[in-house]
Length: 398
DNA sequence: TCTGGGGTCCTAGGACCC
DNA sequence: TCTGGGGTCCTAGGACCC
Image (cartoon, rainbow, N blue to C red; front, side):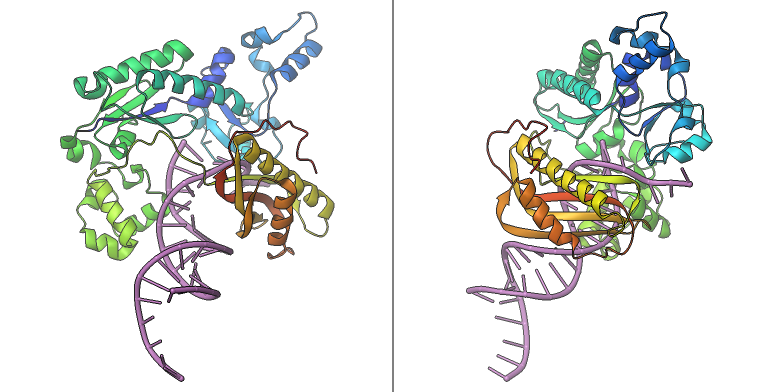
């Protein structure tokens, strides 16, 4: 029988920040918005507190009062992470920073530092792969691990190996994680939430009724807000209630494929393998403007942004060694309506000029009388072009 | 002054071919 | 002339996830 683990880093972004700024632990804190540079903080400190020479080694000594607060934020960013003391005020993930500032103006605001999070992400994944090589990357702070063929992976249902991984990650990075071990990915994912933070949960097939069925349907990875609302419309709130419905009844209402999947999920059935490798399907770049832009009135500004997006996506493709032949755009209008247009061309490309030309044709097929808040460029139907190319920042300008 | 950015997968209709 | 499958590709939109 398979033993699959799901590992979830605890409060990953905030925890990485606390490694640098331990003085912020326990305070209401929000991560979101633009880029921060530690050297800018240091430079400001040296101006405002010239009696001491501040260096990059002094990050842990920066006075708490010196950090930016939510109330000083101006812009259209959203919250990526809110710490527990901040959540007490009602702020949470995906909330606009301006709205959050009204709820908790004194919260510390740290802009996201993806480069740093990626560094720690690589570090903890390297630790895992050294111990259990069959690992599936599920984003910056999550992985699935197949324990089945790891020596000792069965001991105590996987708990022993999970403990070893937890300890090794903490020793290497100073970060904690929560792990769920179960017969498959679906159950392991739910199990990893049972005992947070720094916990381990082991779920066996026989635990379905006692541990899984009492949970709300929304806890199943793959049931989102829309499906959950529809289920609730039928009086189905808990996984046990979902399991009680006939497969055919679900298929008739949710479609043959999704209906059958809902039934399987409620019964804890999932045979997806742990995929160690995957090829990208598409690459894209998008940006939300600081203010809504109009195709005619803001033509020059929009055009420059459009060109930059095409250059960025072309650079991404070449850096990673891919080319694509479906080129498309995405627009979000000021009223939040979204449209996409794309076209497929004869030959694969990673050339910003070609991308810009075809994306430009796509733009002509949408309503440009409405003001826009977001513009995106996407390249799909990718093939590998071979070795990844080092793209200097100035490349692809023309 | 609510609502980011980067992905995957599925569905459904139409074109086109055999 | 009418009718009918099956299969693939393309396009647009939407749900969902991290």
